Length: 81
Length: 463
Image (tube, rainbow over all chains, first blue to last red; front, side, top):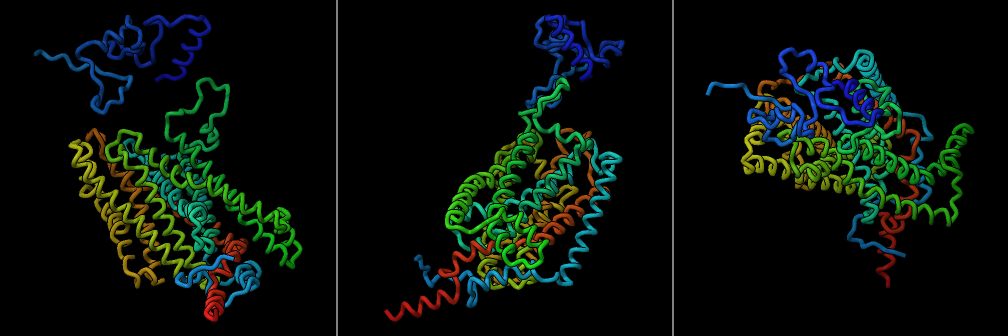
């Protein structure tokens, strides 16, 4: 995912010596998306927006049963159940 | 001195002296090439040049000129890679494992088998190299310290293990082959009349003098190298199989892969040795050294390894059903009855059915039959890799991304080119290298030569 952007942000953070705060960095597709359909962040950070999305009951992985635990996950459609 | 039972068939036929062996082995090097050699060499060279053209087109335009698509991202390139690496295995088995087991029949065939190993590993290496697209960055596959930021190899990837396995294999095979060649090059050097030829063989033979101490070291180093090469027979194709087995694709993700691939590799390798040696013995009149018994032994190995491969195929089918995993079951149903059913049944016929005919002694000692089967086996083993790779990939988990694969003329050209390259190398080898390890063969003349055995027998009867 945007390897140049990610690498640059990591190196900048290293120079400063501080972790990147949630929301300070994002990938190009997420930045361009006006409806927030794509969220990028650190799932290991308990306070991040992406972690909140992951904890949502709607979160799922594609082919979850295969067990590869990919870093991309989706939220199911909101249905009027 | 060691005497061999007369029950054992002689390994060298006719009344041969040491000098006669030298004459027979060196003849192809010292005499002009026959017309058949030139015809074969021209055909091989044309095929090779076609391959060079196809590769040049691939590099210049990009691998989009192949028939690959989003779903089938690996097809002929990896099929051909595995096929060529597999062929190489018989050489190492013959030279290393049979040496450790003291199987003396290997002495007539090991030189050509090792040559075949090296030439086929070279062909194999071309495929991953050119699949990279940007061939000039190929050194990125090695863990070289660099300042490119995050550029580093992934040690979790079996493709990296492949890099180490194949390069180790090629190195050990070349060293082993070359060490064995030293006394034989010295023999050619000592006989050479042409000063240029003499000089070349002088360099190649590293100033071999033939002292007792040199022979003793030669024997020792051969044994050490055999010990080093033996694990490679098992490890190289195990790692090749892990390219598939460590992924999650149904039909690939199975624990049977390593032994199944190793057996298949030895199976196809022996078939290729058989093809090459049947030609060599006929063209160079080596029937007294590569006897029917040698051919029969190799046919037995083909039969046994072919049966192991057959058991593996059936085990795979059984486990697919027994596992209860729908994806796995569909993968195998699709192999046998899907759009690539013809590839699956070609594989089954060539690899499982045809070697079973070798149970008949009459058939396995028949040269024409053996030659046909040796080619059929390699066709079958090519189909095996095609079936494993393409039929597993083209229909995996998501039906929305199912597709078909057919090769472009460029891929066909590259494959034909590697066959041409292989035979170009082998034909050049056959005219410039002693095709039989004559120094080694001479060590068994007194015990396993036909006339010498007979003499000892008659002499023994008087006591």
